[in-house]
Amino acid sequence: MSMQSRYRFACAWLPDGWHRNVVISVDPAGDIVDVSRDDTVTTARTVNGAAIPGMPNVHSHAFQRAMAGLTEQRGGNDDSFWTWREAMYDVASRITPECLNAIAAQLYADMLKAGYTSVCEFHYLHSHVEASSEQHAHEVRLAMSQALIDAANTAGIGLTLLPTLYQTADFGGAPPTERQRQFSMQTREYLDLLGALRQSSQRSAQLEIGIALHSLRAVPPESLQMVLQSRQLGQPTHIHIAEQEREVQACQQHFGKRPIEWLLENAPVDRHWCLVHATHATNAELQGIAASGAVVGLCPTTEANLGDGIFPMEALLAAGGVFAIGSDSHISLSPIEELRWLEYQARLARRQRSVLTSAGQSGGTLLWQRACTAGARVTGRPVGELAVGKRADVVVLDLNSPLFAARNDTSIIDTFVFSGTSESVRDVMVGGRWLVQERRHFAETAVSAGYKRALQKMLKKERSG
Ligand SMILES: [Zn+2]
Image 1: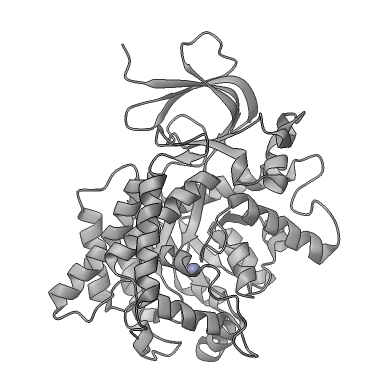
Image 2 (image 1 turned 90 degrees about the vertical axis):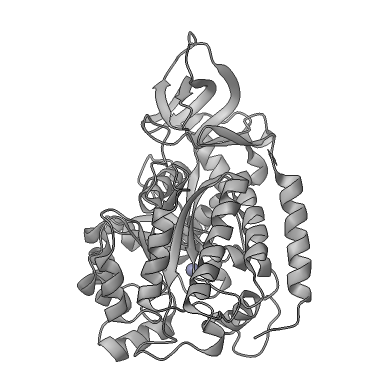
């Protein structure tokens, strides 16, 4: 008698490529304990379709999903990241823990249906009220973090919660503005929050606690050093870096260095770091990132939506650097759209095709594989591959869909990445649990009812800040 569950996939994409009749055995904890190829002997439940590893989403601000589509009306002549940020602050000021929970549960269920099986939540929305005491403030922060942990449990997605330190409005220690105060806290308060979350009894294979520093403009060097001293070995560490040109200029004025340049010289950046955006990077900085092993967290649809600029992807790859993808503001919730944009930006810039791949290689497959592998690293969780010892996070593509007609192995992922939709994803397993079957998330009725109620309530509220 075995406590394992076994699934026979018609075909599966393993670290060394496609195989047929792949039997994946999963233990009760949700880990893959055996993978056997060309196996028609073992008793197993048959799953039609093509199994590929689920994609880690390395950058999420869950609450921003509530404002998708609400900022597309041009405000003035200078509509930019900075004007968008004002609208975002307005939404943020209305969000209670209950509301955050409802938004995140819907968001995470939608991510699963699109093929993301884990998420790194870059969480800086720490408070929704003026706390009456330090203790109260701590409790409010815990409640906001808990709202996200509960939402991930409801949806079933793997979570790397990244409580985020945010202290200043700009370089040079400018205090947070009125509207930024709900994000900010003292370093000691941050370490208390981190400690409380790390000790929490809810730690499981589905939950990891990492560190996030909002950005160099929001975290002064002394605070950054203090937080990094408390960092545990291999703990995922994320930071927004060099997203906006204005930020690069302010950094140069203040430190005499560009943001990535300064970070690489002043922080122990290693392969567990995720440098989010890194949009405005010089070749020297890209080489420094590659040498450090850090992962660049790219969010092409958000970066395009906010007019950030085009990340020099081709140069990163040439330097030997690695990347992962995130949906950030959640203007789009599609890993294939993020990957496609990476390649298309490079094609438009070069006026060539298949830029991010080498001769004879399948571009879509390479993009999916690289984003999975590097993304897994900065989740701090064993995900990103269908292999023994990894979490059983599996996305099953519907090969019966006309889109995949007459596609051979190598063109399955290319077809998915460049022409697929969320409809191409039929089933999704996370940690051995089938969460999405026949394109339906098991809790979607309740989750969407909660989301709609929360949004109506939130958007009706008078502006409070
Ligand atoms: Zn972000």
